[in-house]
Length: 221
Image 1 (cartoon, helix red, strand yellow):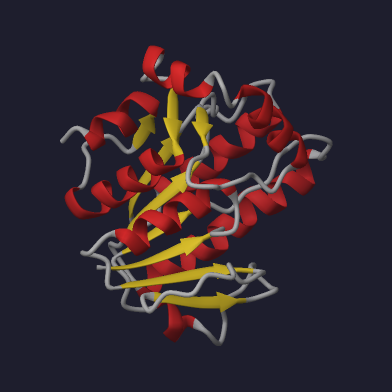
Image 2 (image 1 turned 180 degrees about the vertical axis):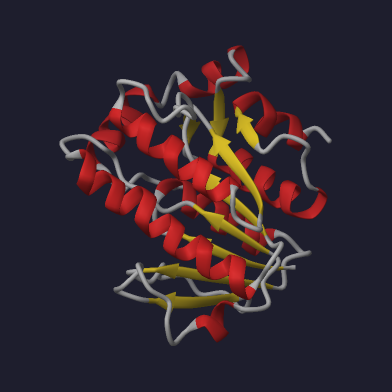
């Protein structure tokens, strides 16, 4: 299997990339982002590109893949809706529309979030934009699945790029293993997310909107 990973330097993306490189069924992992991951692996190919709103001229490098794991995203804190939509909706659809053309029918897994507003009319800005993004992806000729994880425990030395999240995870670190045990349908680890994405790419899943309980259920199949 050949997979693309967008946002491989973020916390979730790092976990997904790690699981892809460890999986013996994955023969090639291509990362796409503005910066390199800094990792060395014979299965890894990196596409470093400043402009993530257009893939003109490199579509041949994006062809022949079985799945795309789209982990690119930013915190909405302090952002206006138009700016957040430009990063969240525009960048995601630019990639997905290109991939739906060069790899029609491929599996496309988008990391959304618990509380995403599929009606697009709610009062919470980030949830509306994420919902709009999800709905647009579901209309494309892709095997699209929306991952809506809640709290994610970073493992294997992985850290968030967002300072506020690093502080939060640092404070919560002693409690996270207990929370995962006590609330299995609300808390996942970076390993869980990566392995679940691979499982969906290999076997599929009947639900296209996947809450934490669905993500965990995939791991038990």
